[in-house]
Image 1 (cartoon, rainbow, N blue to C red):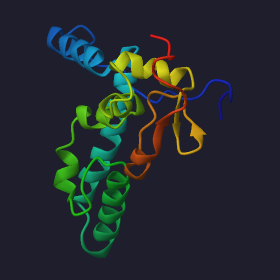
Image 2: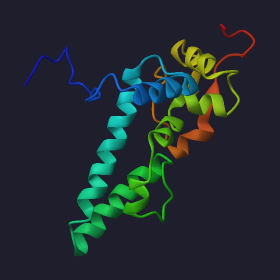
Image 3: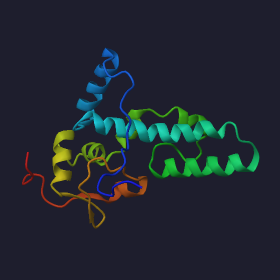
Image 4: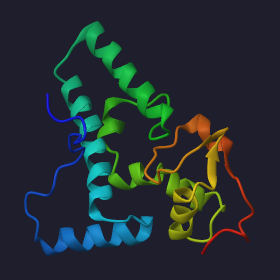
Length: 163
């Protein structure tokens, strides 16, 4: 069962940790999306890997079972705004880690213009200045659902926010 105080890892480290091209790509993504460390990037990659694995497993199924599972997967990903409602399993395989990173609360707050930079957006979120509806969210890596986008708001004036 394991110790409840030590939850299971939600990411995997790269198999080849010192490949220069991968390191440069990771560093570029860290700066572009304002991630704190590479672990946050690896979590997004693990989430993408999970959904792509489910999509690949659909290709061996046939009939009604495949249709049911495919619509369930499409509905889940469409709820998060990663793909459209009328997408197919091929569209799931075309997703990239950038698509997942674009759905993080930190990036959404920045893209909405509520923060000056992605780093400022992260600071606003961590300090409890951002709410989705009536709920304060303090997790920058929270994956925003499509229906929640319009409910994101600042709880205080941005001029008083710490920079």
